[in-house]
Image 1 (cartoon, one colour):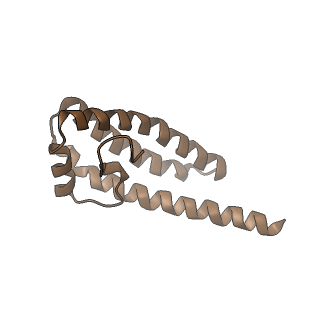
Image 2 (cartoon, helix red, strand yellow):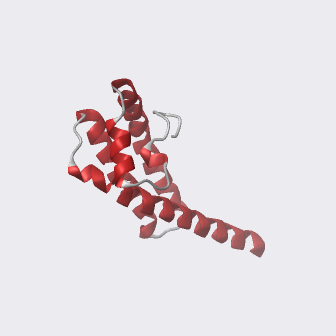
Image 3 (cartoon, helix red, strand yellow):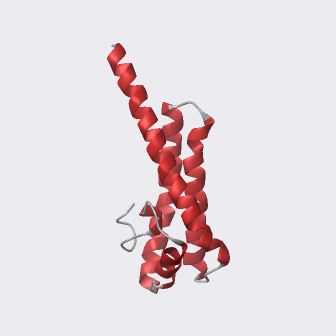
Length: 122
């Protein structure tokens, strides 16, 4: 996903401030916005798949939370990329991105531990 779009895409970063996010989006040229838009459309497919995979591996509803955060983040970015208009809700992007990454990391650790325990039982 990091290669589909301009370098430093917001949803590929683990952390950024409101000012960094705003500056990044406002400084994209039309070609970068078009490339970013393509990458974000692919990201919708990606987030559905990793959410489903998490659910297959851990049959708990909370595994969908990172996908939900990612979906909101992606839809906000898409709305800017399509309209070109910066609106106040875009300032919330970091509040979706950071928890998304922490949750993805936590669930990945949980899956790894679960698989490791299963392997040791054999």
